[in-house]
Length: 344
Image 1 (tube, helix red, strand yellow):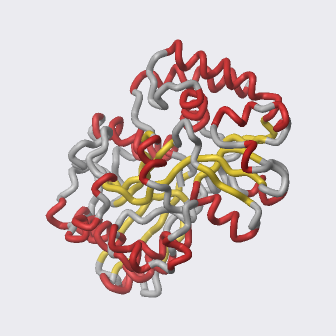
Image 2 (cartoon, helix red, strand yellow):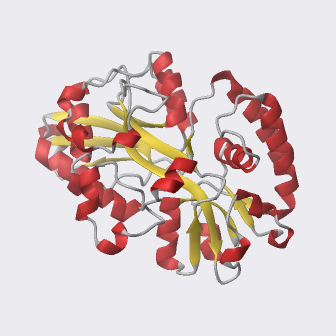
Image 3 (cartoon, rainbow, N blue to C red):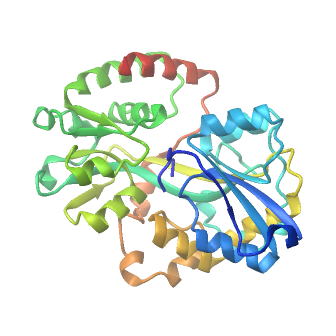
């Protein structure tokens, strides 16, 4: 997402208190908007006497398309979700990461490394990770009314449900609700998920991935899908917003550092990744965006109320029941076909 707010209108801005002409290097970064603390970016510029040119994209698809058009040049560090890593590495779009240049990598949570999409982390490393679960207005909906994905189909939630505007999240939810993997490549299972989602239509009031917490704050939706970081942000304004990890299993996602194959500044790119991995910088990401830290040492530096917040930090059991969204190859066309039918 995901994610903090994925899909915000793209903008380009330079981040430096230094005169660009005086900087010894320029690092070109390509990321989702509002997804990295400006304070951290400025600290990197100051420490390394560089300028960061920070460009943004709205989704993985637009990031992929632009890098393709540029022949993987023009950016030194970019970000991609799990299910794009395999595709991009297979197509020769990514440079191999030199882990010897990343001393802080030793403190990254082991469970985030070695995932199916990049088993040796040759081409990607975790930036932030999170969970797609269920949010609901506890002033309107009682805890006993909702414990899992299947509850969203209840008739009492007519015209109250928000779904993320994301094919893999929505179909992942429906697949999980029916006991299947969110990474299914079986067309019969995907079709069954589509047919199940058709039955959900009377309950759906909005699709939103730009700012998915806003429909809850405005009262447009009372229950629906939510990224845990966005739920955390919304709870600051809306104390009655509850967030749960569905009993059928959550959708786990991770956004990752990548270095485009055509990067002109790979050494500085490694310095940037390692800088972001410092515990004090990880803390700033958690506090600003509400997603769990990748660095194990960061949690000890967080305030107790943040460290104990289960919206940010799922239990081990919740993680065990979840699945990371992986690349499904040509099967994505099956999903896209039924997605278009669902939204038509």
